[in-house]
Length: 273
Length: 367
Image 1 (cartoon, rainbow over the protein chains, first blue to last red):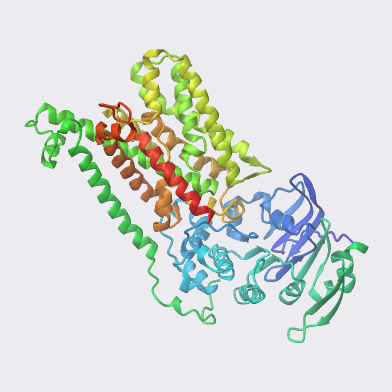
Image 2: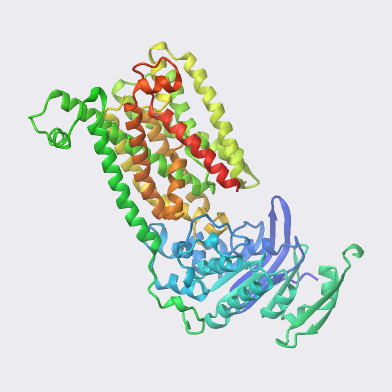
């Protein structure tokens, strides 16, 4: 089942034959993925399958033992932390919100890679910061403390921070965790808008398969440290896959509004596996 | 990339956004500067033996007017050097605390609670007792280096003890800081037993954190040290800002984690160590000052650090003023101890104040 992907120079991100460990436990085994320019790619898979580890590897947050990662045609090993931050912005899962920091203070930090440490000492009042905050719809809260905002607003503030970085690629690790359904959709629509309007390349990890189906151009399925399959939602999400990878008995219908696959899960068969 | 703004309806966008935080910050800095000036003036005007100096007489001495009495000269020099020293020590300790809190992502991180102060004091005492004898005129300039070295060693030990699978948990860090600090304090006491009687008393007085022996040479030494450290502070502030978000975000924003961490840690250690080298173990300034400022100027270190410098300076200056002017009669009545003509070092008052403040924060954090 293991699909080995050869690095293609035109991809935004291309990782091949990756072996990576986390806390000395081998998580990724010969895994490879390909993220296309201008598309939304979503990594899915059961808990512990290596989705987050994969994202950490291609965003340079985790060292890998074997393989190769290529960002915009260049080996990730050749990037300095700063140079990589100009190509790719990352929003990790559950970021720490320091106390007493306003939305503007937070978003200004996105300029770090562009202006350098000493440049940050000046008050960064570029239009970019204002526009980033505007894009996520938080202009009214620009002076409010981030930790006083609601969960959805806080997540939008963090997205504004990544936007202020002004990169072409945006990586998000479970951007909808702990949000209610309305705010989940709000965040995903915001991300979709960034992809459609600004032509940003988006790669994210989602747990909700229906959201993955509705918002992704491309889905990558990981299981047990390997990439099981990847492709368009209709090609990837099958009854067999849900049974084999997620341990779920399910049926798939067409979403009457979006025309995307819609999964109705019926029963866990994890104990039968 | 930044295009097509018409679609989102975010009406506030067109309004001119006044950045209230930075505006408030400017006013606060002005107020703090006035506070510092007033504390400085009061510190010089009022002092021992009820010699009251009016500002015009102070100015006469400072400007080198020949027409001043010997007493006025002594009083002005003594009080001025001591006040400037208090100011610099307080400022350095407060900035050190603010940096450590960002680095450790912990509002309770403070030089004396993370083993930094104890590392510096222990190194100095151990060197004084067991180290080679150095010429008298070099002592004042070598002590800071020994203190910095001690602070860095103890902080590194604390860090490694608190580190588990690549993560430094805030609570674990404080526990390890207290542990390392405790062990080092014992080492200090053991060293003192070996110390010759001639300067054991001096060392004990120094450990309590006193400004009483301040000379102009101390002032010169500390100002040179702080001048050297200023560019380090400038470089540390934006980096420490990013560290507040955790390693992954800081790295994603373009900061190399380890070099940044080493720089900030060195700066914080060195600021505390040079202060400790001259006045001894003064604690809690780095806890009280950033904490009380944070709710007002916010957590952005670009605003917090300059404000910390001024408020920390004012705090130690005012506390030292109280320490040296609080009548021993009052102390006798409070404590019931025979303390006639005794003045307690400023470190004692700051510890009392800081202890109370610490309890207050713990209560607040709990709720």
